[in-house]
Image 1 (cartoon, rainbow, N blue to C red):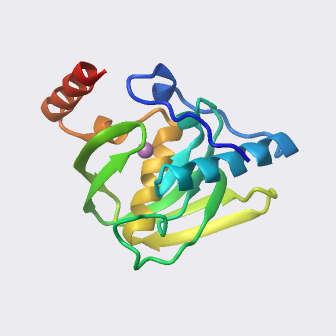
Image 2 (image 1 turned 120 degrees about the horizontal axis):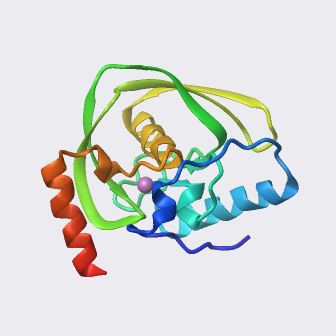
Length: 169
Ligand code: NI
């Protein structure tokens, strides 16, 4: 396993659409394991393949992997070609992203989602959830469409954050 470098805004790869995975190969499973290790090391609660520079529709999530809050149990998801097939309600959550360091903002999301995907063995997975896992799924799936959480903010707020990030760089 290997810890992969995480791409940081304004890296253009973060704004590209990732391609569907056609076949789950040994190489792809290795990438998934590397993504898991990278997420745990960061530490983060989710990671999408474009964040390590790979434009494939793969995400990993473990909402238990959070230093500040030890109450949540570990539950690791490795999802290939995830799709939100249903969503309901509205919620606002304070979000951050490994690719947008040191920025946290409230983002509007669906409160409940149903996600269909494949696991790393090509078996179908269905997740119906609310709470942090629902937020995290929406955040990571957005990454596969080249969307960062700051892209979901008002244009004024987004412009402020982008100029702050550019200055930092
Ligand atoms: Ni993110």
